[in-house]
Image (cartoon, rainbow, N blue to C red; front, top):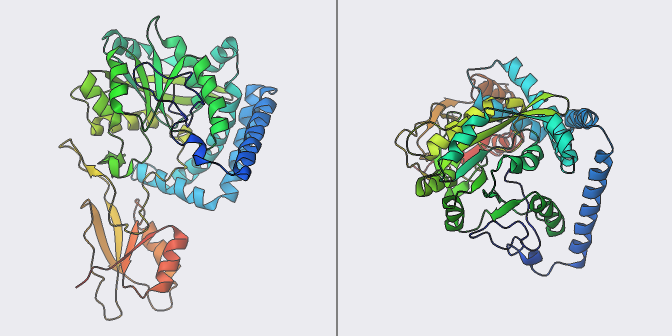
Amino acid sequence: MPDHDTSSSASPGAADGGAADPTAYRRELIRPTLWRRVRWRLELAVFVGVETFLGLLPLPWVAATGRLAGAVAERVLPKRRRIVARNLRIAFAGERSAEELRALTSEVFRRSGANLLCSLRTGDMGERSLARALTVRDEVVYREALARGKGVVILLAHMGNWEAIAQWFPKLLPPGVKGATVYRPLNNPITNARVAATRARRGIGLFSKDDNPLGMAGFLRRGGVLGVLADQRAGEIGELVPFFGRMTSCTPIPAILARRTGAAVVGVSLRTVGAGRWEMGFHAMESGEPTTVGVMRLLERMMRVSPADVFWLQDRWRVERKSPHRQPGKPARSADATPKKRRRALLWTHADGRPARAPQAVPDDVDYENGRPAAGEAVDVFLRRVDAASPLPLDFVVSAEGEAELREVCRRLGIGWAKEAKA
């Protein structure tokens, strides 16, 4: 029941109690041009063609093909490789060596490719084939949460073969209990409708991420089971809480729903156990009032089950381009939202030896260092050396406005740049 980027053209899978028409979010992007309509249909044709072709292959072959595609992607997408490497470096700073992180980065690409293609193959698999491909662990955690009768928030991450969860989860719903997921519609409404129709046939309802949370709360109060993805950045509407020890903006929705309805929060992980085989595990949340801090701790536990199966290609701890010293988000509700992994920033030293003046960081979780290259040392060599001097990456550099070469090197290396504060 993962929170996929799906919607439907009507509302065949709309959950009882508030799920809106899934196409109302854009109304075909407001009078689409002829080219856009043609492009949508071409994209759908490619999607259906790939799905049909993969359906002819045994699942282990699909997984092997996906691993190969992932290995190629690692080579031809250097920017994405840099994002994955940085994410893993932040998440496992002090836990894994540089060599281990490089190996894990490569495996993430291979595993992501395999999981992506297998998710397309899994969509139309029969029940027996799916049962051979998926095993379930610690289901008692989920059953105990369901027995409370106040609904269950299923916490999900971009992890493993997400389509396997979507196809299997309706089998875990007792008679009379409804399941739904929070989704973000695809930009292509035609493909969107097709994918959403598949969800509807399985009995999974849909709530748009833009729907009023009151509808989701009502669904939970009636004993429903609602899947929510929580591993993506939440921007200005999120809470600034630690995730793998690093402060970042996280969605407050799972915690808010649980507090308002009394619903239990249960995490679901998915790890690869063989070619075309996965294990789905259930994880209980720590006791106490549900907070966003607690939700992210649960999410981290889930992802640690199999870091290679996590889709690390999204820039989770992104440095804001225009103001890297600031992070979007609201102060955390919980008092224990203290980061263990602070951000790193370099104050570029002026020619007269004065370090650049640090801007006010928000939140105040930045450690500043001073420096500039020695005579004859290239800027990029210097920045790479500073970056490698700590398990955590260098997040941004602060300098005077006129350092054009420095800004260009920072852009090329994926390091943020901020103008020094006024005197």
